[in-house]
Length: 267
Ligand SMILES: [Zn+2]
Image 1 (cartoon, protein in one colour):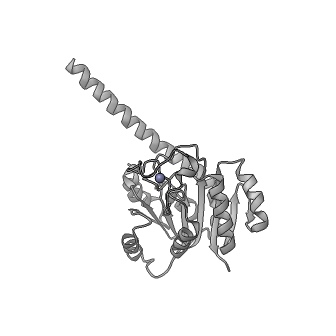
Image 2 (cartoon, rainbow, N blue to C red):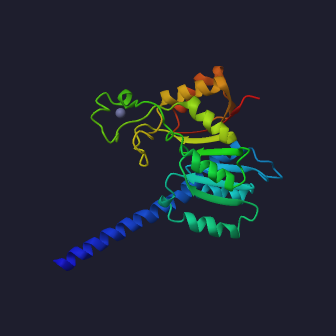
Image 3 (spheres, helix red, strand yellow):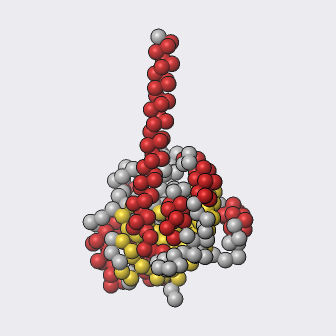
């Protein structure tokens, strides 16, 4: 009996390990797929690629920096994530990628976008303290920096914040103007790739910070961003976003689950 229990325990541990390895593998293939949509947003020079450019990858999957380094050879890619330990290969990748990415320095840090002290320390250490990154990449991460009040009641009438002490089912409001102001302080061009399907469960949601966008949230975001900034849609359509185009975009987004765009200050 005792032996059986220990075997069962071992089996369950092996199962978990296998699941983790499978997730790791999925990260590599997902990352490739995402990057094929994102790469046009960098508008790389045909000859000089992204030479001399710097990229901050917020909520990094640790893999995209390697692919970007190999293809576009920027000067530096800094990846930050609230929990790098999710990626068992992160430190190996950071160390061993040096063999192939001679032109690009890749650095990965555990750091939250909201942790200004640590973020400033990283920028200082990496020589970006006075300027901005050329690009800030926010891939499958934009639904996390939710900072406003809980809006979960709009999605589920039964939701009651007062009863949900752990805020497990809360979803904070996405405040696009404040969020992009912060992102544009960090970099000249903010490149966003976002998957959206509010019915899909967001597995790395922390309290109210997370939960995929609804079509309404995206519409509000694009409307507010287009009024203040230069917004260029990359996928599923390539176009400059202005008020006239807003209706088109909203109709198009209904047919897809992913969007890629970039935001810059108005010139
Ligand atoms: Zn709530």
